[in-house]
Length: 280
Image 1 (cartoon, rainbow, N blue to C red):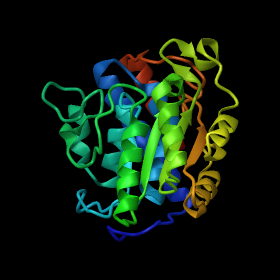
Image 2 (cartoon, rainbow, N blue to C red):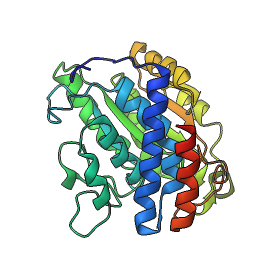
Image 3 (spheres, rainbow, N blue to C red):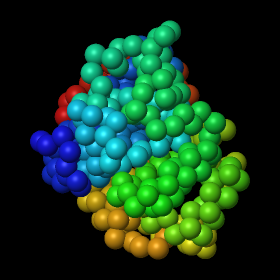
């Protein structure tokens, strides 16, 4: 596989294998500390797989490549799946996953720029990622650069007013090189998002703000391919992809279990791995 390849198109079987490996590593990483964001990681594994393996233009040999697509993780606490994806993609050594959350490790519980060029911005405070990304996207426009900016945002973050200020600005400036991906799992720290603040219909809200909006199954690679294709083909406005995901995806006894920061003992992790490795 070429290191620099625009819009690589791996087949569905390969994407599923990578996603399953990422899920296994999420389980192992969180199990080592006994508590963490395993549910969100399992749920977002397919989304991260598609973004890093099939959509974003990257160079695994040169993470600082000037023309790389920029990926901003606004949900910085969803770090296990992020680091596991980097390892699966070959952007960091797989052995580094064993240092996750250790004192002094660059693989922190909240993704930060200490990891280097692989992290475009530190977004520990939720709701900030879109603002940072649109600034980079606008700069690219002014410099006639071809790279795109992608933002992964949690649906709970949509309760932050800063997100909607950024949404208005991005549409007003016709930033069609900006693509927002909302991990729509209806989970936030207080529980189900609709029990905290009803946000639906999210797609109509973004359309009213001047965005192209696509709602997809975040576990269907073909659906994600269509949505990202539409995003790249859309001119004059930014695009939001609302990817519906299931927390705990891939482990039946964890699916739809709404636990934000799950206690995750070793015996439960072993059960998860037996399921994931059997399905691999």
